[in-house]
Image (cartoon, rainbow, N blue to C red; front, side, top):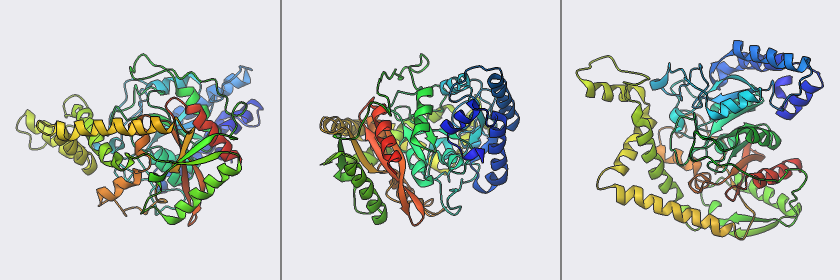
Length: 475
């Protein structure tokens, strides 16, 4: 079936006229129609627009116009990334009927490249979660085992790729929300260096941590999507131009590179079989000619606590705009005055996890506690970043698990927030330090995928992709 192709394979097929973009898109939509009710990967699907764009791509190809690698390729987009004229909910009741008034920068770039958008994917509300169980639209299920979570918060995008509903997808990563679901679903998920991809048009959760990135079937496709969406954007002052001349296949070799294994990432409580799978992956790198060195990131133990002060603080600030007045859900019952509108709209519009994080963040930023919590967390963040700077003076990249476990069962952790937060223990540090990191499959544990995480130095995104590509091709 055409929907099982990679982006690169589909592009070649379109050029060779083995099939049309319309046929490719119809295959994806047919699979969505058959299986999405069970998996719940999509919140909304726009079949008519997708088919219209596919016909436009076929017209170009028929006229002999030279096409780019994403022309006529069906993609899925996480529902916190704005597409003009399309409903964008962020998985929340408070934005249940919100229609995006403009395109995110990444969407403009993909439209210019000729990509086709099949629909918007399910997610934890405002990207707050590690399982996609916190969505107002119900949980997404892991295509590899419908009793298990796909990870979160980009679980809908990961599930859509793993189920062959699309050829690739975009997600957002605040503390592991691309990499962890990629690990659970057995696909590739790449979080670029902070600022390499514009955040304009991404609904902000934690602005100093959020980053848009690709979820794909292989590393080559992740590179294709990353190259299309990266770059400086005048509408995002934190964005940068990544100037790298490294070519993934021609100029990079594993032989002689130094790979660091952080001792803090192999901890008590990690699934033993996941650990053994990781050790086999490390051995494979050694057999390919890499030099393996044990390293230390001494402030890693503080990363989780640091993250869960900084992130909710930014959440409480960013979500203050949802007040029941400007846009989104507005409570109508038992309203006496303006304060009631604010309180009841937010009470009814936000789910439990969103309210929990807003309250935690507001407390951390409040008078008398700002210095004790938020300021201290920012100091720890600086120390975590310093650890990475020192380590990358010795090694080219780091290898670590993506998650301490394989995908857990739906409902298993939803009533224990602290247990759920530990799902991101290995991914959070890369966000705090603004580093590029990728998750790719490295084996099966109890017939479910385990993820290998490669973390690189700031702005060395190409090196991370190159190392991941070499590992994947050696499988």
